[in-house]
Length: 106
Image 1 (spheres, rainbow, N blue to C red):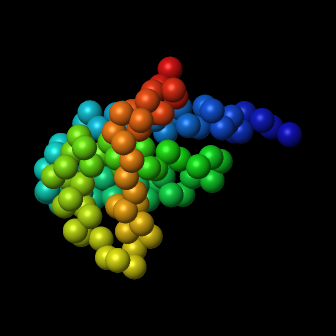
Image 2: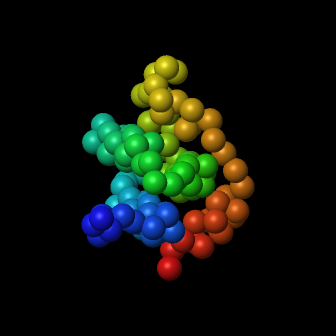
């Protein structure tokens, strides 16, 4: 069996956190269509991950805090029947969210 394509769960979570940090740094806090679509595509990609459960509550909390214009604009564009709608209901303490993500950022 070729094991080169199999990624360990911890490595998968590290890749998720690394990608999220890149997104936070590059995505502007604006309500333009391009930024919103990029953000929503990113969230969709996280929901497709099957190897691990992505840290969605932490990600949504940090986005809400650091990119509030983008967060609220994206929230307004999705329909209540969308699979993304539930993500915008997630919330936790910001410091705890950062702490939890920091454990994978190594």
